[in-house]
Length: 290
Image 1 (cartoon, rainbow, N blue to C red):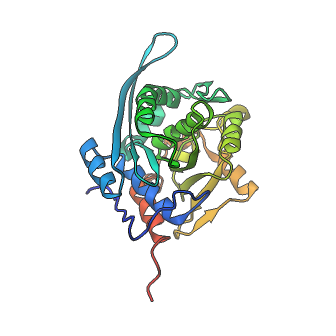
Image 2 (image 1 turned 90 degrees about the vertical axis):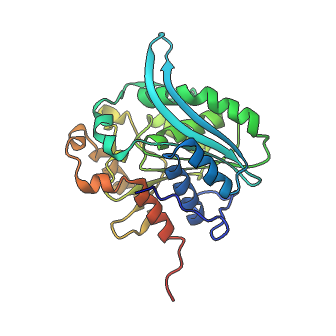
């Protein structure tokens, strides 16, 4: 069964200059995040149908760190530009690989590319591997005339977050919005605080019901890894809850642990599916029957 990345910009036009949560933009970016799982030819064909005439596929398989150690990665994404907006999307981790991915995760904290705070080493390596390609694509296709939107699912959400921080802090580019779906924790409190200040009201992190991925890496001592941005949570019946109360957010922050990952149930995996996120986003843009 193919992934669900159906999106009709004529029927549900995205708002390129919107800030914060927008239901039509949520559908557009959810579809874009799911499209990132496809091959280069399919992605290019679909984004052209969406009205994006410039395209660059991004794919990196290794990163050499400051110590000369080559770290294998499999970072994939794409950049496309149209008359109204630029879109950057990153591929996540296949649901069938979630257990292995978290078993072998490199959860050491390293300095963030933005220079503020610390981030997860595995995510940092995956992003550093693809950054030269992304930087070249931006140099070629971005002229400062359209807003930039960034998205990703799962690992792709972590990469989208790092890309946003890099573009806002180092490249000084005007990122209009960041929407992530089923994103794991990326960095410490200082990094999240910086991102919140750099993107006030423009970051929306979607979590579906029992999706386990947003609960890892485990917070650990002194909550090294942290979620501090705006959370949009899909309740079991599909209702979207924006801005959880502080005590519900704290309970969510604290409940992740390594042992949870070894007990992944069907709901945890089903709720992490990007197809499910697209379905839920579509519900909120579809008028109820008369």
